[in-house]
Image 1 (cartoon, rainbow, N blue to C red):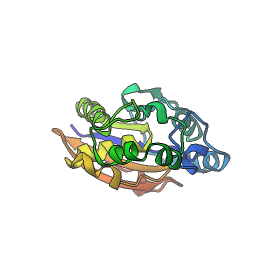
Image 2 (image 1 turned 120 degrees about the vertical axis):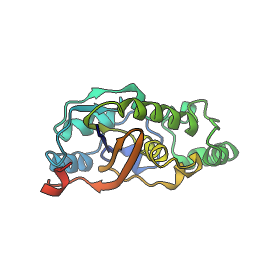
Image 3 (image 1 turned 90 degrees about the vertical axis):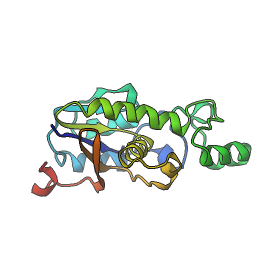
Image 4 (image 1 turned 180 degrees about the horizontal axis):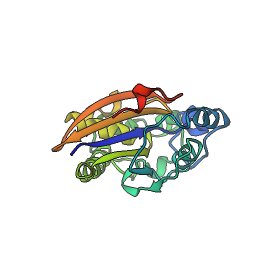
Length: 197
C-alpha cells in the first residue's frame, strides 16, 4: 500500500507579502486569480484537507476543492507575535526572535515551538501512512517544512533553510513509514505527467 500526500501552499495574502505572521487575513486578488487559473491541475484524491486558516480555506475554494478542516495541519501558533511583521518583532524582541530562529525548542512568543509543530505534523503523517490513495492538503508553509523534515529525517534546525513558495505542490509518497519527496511543483495547467501517480 502506497500513501501519497500532496501539500499545496496557499495563495498570497497581505500578511505573506509583508512578512507578517498570519493574522487571519484573506488571500489577495492576485493570489486568488492564480489559484483559479490552477484549478483542475491537481491529481484526483481520496481525501481533501485544509489547514483551518482563512487563506488556506480560500485557496482551496479557488482551486475548486471542497476540503475538510484538519486541526493537526494548522499553522504554528505564534502566540503574541500573531499579526506582527518580522521586522517589528526584530525591533521589539531581538533576542527572543534570534532564539526562536536558532533553537527549535524555543517558543518565546508563547505559542508553539518549531519542534512542537514538527512533532505534530510527524504524528499526522505517520497516521496517514496507513491509508491507501492520495490526500490533497492545502496548508501553511511551516507545515510543508515540518513534513519535509520528517520525511527526510532531517534535523529540526534545517526548518528555516527550506523555502516554500506560495501555490506550489510538495508531494510525499510512502510505504512502511518511509517517505519519498517531490518538491515545489508550481501549480498550473494540468499535464498528463502531473496527474499520474
